[in-house]
Amino acid sequence: MSITRYEMTIHLVTESPLHSGGIDEVVDRSRPDSERVAVPRRFARDGKGHPVLTGRSVKGAVRAACEEYLHSDAGAAVRKQLGSDWEGLWGTTSSGKPRAATLTFHAVDLAEAAQRKDGSAWKSGTADAPETHPVAQSIALATRTGIAVNRYWGAAGDTALFEHEYIPAGCPLTLTITAQAGRTSTSDKGTQPEADGPEPATESQVEQLFALIIGLLESGRVAFGGRRNAGWGRVRLDADEPTWTLTRSRLGTREDLLTWLGGGENVTSAIDPVDCTESERIRITISWDSPTGILVAEPRPEKKAEDDTPAHKGAKGQADDQQEMIYTEPLRSGPHSTAPFVLPGSSVRGALRSRASRIARTVLAAQQSTPIDDWAERGVHDQLAADPTLVRDLFGSTDRRGALRVLDTLASGQTTLRKVVHNAGDRWTGGVAEGLLYGEKVPDTRWKDLVLELDPRSLPGPVDRRRAAWCLLGLTLAELATGALPLGSRGTRGLGQIHVTRVRVDGGADIVGEPWDFIDPGGDAADRDGAEVVSIASQVLKRLRALMIEPNPDANWTGWSSYLCETKESCRD
Image 1 (cartoon, rainbow, N blue to C red):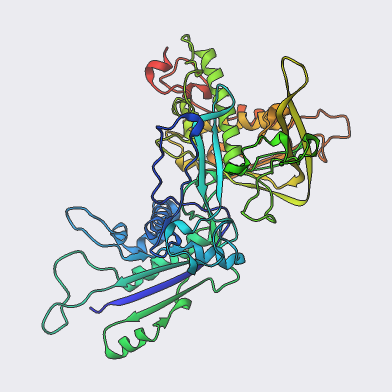
Image 2: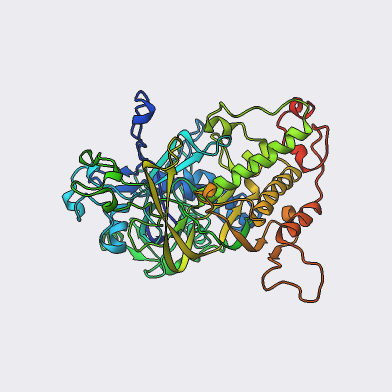
């Protein structure tokens, strides 16, 4: 048996921000709280100092998507074609038959990808070309900052400031995968294959794997890097480039070697991508607007040492009334001033989780005889770990990823920045406190739909527990529809109010039932004949009440909330 080598090149485009961690800098926690700063989580770097998406990170994402599909009923036909040992094609370290992986995934150069987008992807303060950056620390991509909110106090949690290096949506990526089928002979005559070790992959198996990978990428089932529950890491095939190319080189004869040296035989047309479009995800689409404006703030730039003079005194030689107000800017989806404004999926997801936790703990407080734990002295990370079980099923914890994903929401159309100025009052004089004048720029714009995706397969337990988790999420969406759940920051100052005009839910028939399509009665769906007008929240509650849920046998009460308790002891408390 001779060796056959393959090389597939796939052209992708990021549909959302992409981040994948490398070697994190050690945080100095010995400094006083007032001197602590966020340490960015950066990409891994190659020998040239370029940020890269490592091959093992790409392989892990692709392998997880392949195994998920092949274990489903839809993947039965492909599973049969790959053979009974298809899992071994990804490599194994088992003591019985250790085996190297058939496919090799190469690192993706993200510096090249960001440059190809607009030619100016380097962060301000660095040179314009990668050739001038011989060390890893010289190249830095844009970063995005996020926080975790303390559920008790409603403010940013201590040690809960995060900063992630990322590349924005719209960046082209070039993914290279190589593979080898067959193996060389060890006999004198060159006709007998090796007897020891597992059987090597065949050409048909390798080509079938490539067809599956292309099908999964086409269907959007593959996401790279971290923060995927916040909508990051989504990619699609690049329509502006040849989507993929595949070359094959058989190395059995002299002519084969010459063909290999010449670039190999182009066998792109021999690949028929697997149809993987059928998905079990539940997709929730929420149309909305904001009467007050939404603001998620861009972090203020750090002051330089020479700028330590209080801002209210103005520049040197200027009077107080001549000072220039430094406004807080709204967050954009990319590092450039032309990028659209964004409502991050992590911000919406955090607001939904906080409200879901409040609902769940309120129900538990009414059902259990013992008081609910007081979170006043708990840090935000301990609060997340102590969330009721259905909240952790939906939104995850430090131990496992949740089933709910919330995508970034972009502004659409023309945007006007409204300047809002406010100050803090001096409690003694009753006048304006010195140095406490603030200003924000609030974008007045139309926003695209909020999009949430729920993966029922990631929800643990029987179908009744998954329906209970859906009930909790539905109650949270009902509160969002009433306008009682603000989004973004400055909610206590009147910003962040939203008006939901439509809620649509598709997929997940065994959990959701029939698809949802609820329209605000005050809009185009208002009944003009005097019939009863039903709000979106009321329609949601009506559908949730119709769900058939067998109660948790360990609890001493019925209904979906019986699945909020985690242990038999707490259920019967």
